Length: 96
Image 1 (spheres, rainbow, N blue to C red):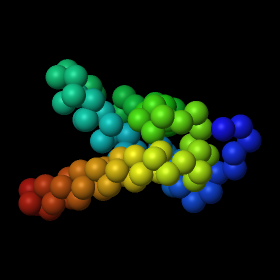
Image 2: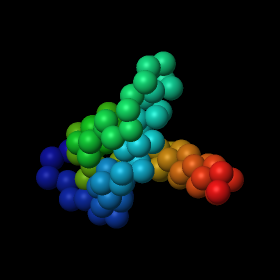
Image 3: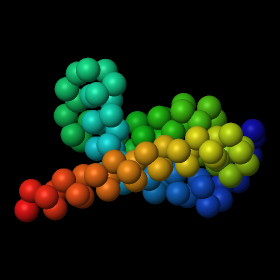
């Protein structure tokens, strides 16, 4: 899709990529998936962007607002992250 203008989902994806917790989530998910230790802080904003683009099979985050399949996949990624983040908050509260 050429010259596609992004909307709400594209902005949401950009903000998600800027979120240090999301990048930490990616570090830890890749550690588990690859069965290797990936230090927190390894994934950059660009890495997060690339992951979303690859997982959603798009060439630009702007496509999220125009491709139903990609939007659904992005929402799944975001929901998985939110569940992971909620578990982290509960774990931190339990240790205090």
